[in-house]
Structures are given as C-alpha cells and as structure tokens.
Image (tube, rainbow, N blue to C red; front, side):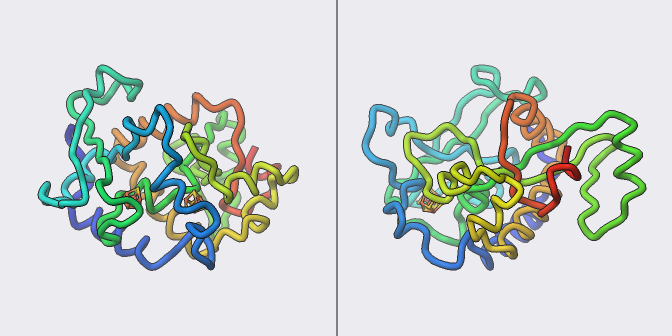
Length: 225
Ligand code: SF4
Ligand code: SF4
C-alpha cells in the first residue's frame, strides 16, 4: 500500500512519543505488562501488532525481537481503500523489545483516535470557535482521543478506571493520564490521519462505535457532541 508519510516523519513521531508515557508511573506494574504479555489464552497465538501503512519503513526487517507476518487487507475488515499486505508483528521477547522501535500502536495505547462527524450547521459553529485546540480536520470532522476499545484478551487497569468513572467528562483527569502524553499522541494522530489510508481506518473504526469515552481534548461533552 502506498503511504504518503515519509520515513523521516514516522521517525519524528517515534521521537516525540519516546519522550512521554501514559501515566507518571510504570503502569506495567499494575498488570504485569498485560498489553505486552497477556495471560495465556486460546487467542494468544494470534496476538501481535498491526503496523500502520508505511510504518514498516522504520524497520530493517532483521530485528531479532520481532517475527514478521502479514495479512491481506482484502481478507480482513480493513477499509475498502486498502489492498495488499498489512504487516503484523509478533514480539518474540515481550515485554522486552527495542523501545526506540515500538510500533505506534504500542506507544499510543491506552488511547485511540476517533473522528467525530458533524453536519454543516455544527461545522459552522466549530469554525467560528477559535482556540488552541481547534481540532477541525477537513470540512466536517473533528479528531478526539478516546479510551481504546480494542478487543483484547486482557484488561488494562487504566481503561477499567476510566470505564468505572461515570462522568466521562473527567475520564482523562480521573485516570491521571499524563497531559504531555495526550498532547503528543493527539499531535501524532492529527498528522497520521492526513494520510488517506490511515484516515479511512480511523473513520471506519469510528463509524463502527456505538459508545466511546473521550479523554482529550478536555472539552465538555456539549462541546464535543
Ligand atoms: S497500558 Fe494498560 S495494560 Fe498496558 S501496561 Fe499499562 S496498565 Fe497495563
Ligand atoms: S513491541 Fe514492545 S511494547 Fe509493543 S507489544 Fe511488543 S514488547 Fe510490548
């Protein structure tokens, strides 16, 4: 698949995310690094990480901590605009890996991008509201970060904490998710969705969601919906 994002841009994103962490402590101690080393289950043979289109440019293919596989986009539920190989990495020595080369999906978990769609009236409301979190992308959509709802055979304590918070407006602060992490992750996803293939993936996932817990930016729900 043809990515519009250069290797140097992916590397800049990796560097930015190298400097931040989801929380101000080692959350792996809460769960035994469950997102790297899930409890053994019938699903674990299939566990791994999909790279985003073009992200493979970061790797040499000789990393000994990775086993490379791929699926064909046409065979799985990827956007219609995708075709051909989608790279899928399995970690050979989790949770130990080359921290500088952790894929984006590892770096931005436990949050995920979500695209809100607006009708044209709402769009004009947002166009007239100026702030340093002007999140409008394209004509009628807005990117936010939500708690990841990735189906996984493990529980993330950070996500559980957010889900147990009835007032999702405060989910970000209640989770004590690090603000620099959220800002950097938002910056990265804002750039990533400028790539048409990645945009289509985020849009497809967003349209499939009936429910989500927003965590960034710290707008009130009225501002978001
Ligand atoms: S992100 Fe969640 S599942 Fe992963 S190490 Fe931190 S608390 Fe555990
Ligand atoms: S690449 Fe590293 S951080 Fe990501 S799942 Fe594998 S061991 Fe965990």
